Image (cartoon, rainbow, N blue to C red; front, side):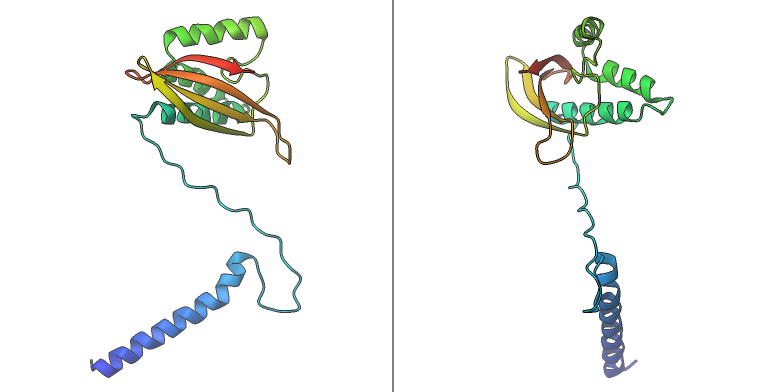
Length: 171
């Protein structure tokens, strides 16, 4: 094949690809290329990608709260209760499990969330470490809107085992 013919083929392919993208991009973006069309509703942005590190106690706290909230959010799923129980056994030390159980017996509320309902969002921030432990602040958001209700939980983890060793509601 001659160099000129090859160049013409590549140029044709590039033009075709560009025209195809020009035609479908507005449709994928939810907009119209016609000036007389009504504006379309914006599509919600995709959440930021998640990442983690199993060696990080803060990541493990975030992994635990994410999975735990997912499991109790889906309370219609027959496996949800068993999943929540297994998550507690895996991520919490034996002493923390006992403390959570005592809170639940006394307060008749979930001892992981310190509440009777399920938050719509959660966030975990590292707050420090020392004496073989790391601490994180879990922020639970209970509603959407301009002024959502938020509660916070201080979570302590053992740096060696990475298990959660204490949870306390922050007032």
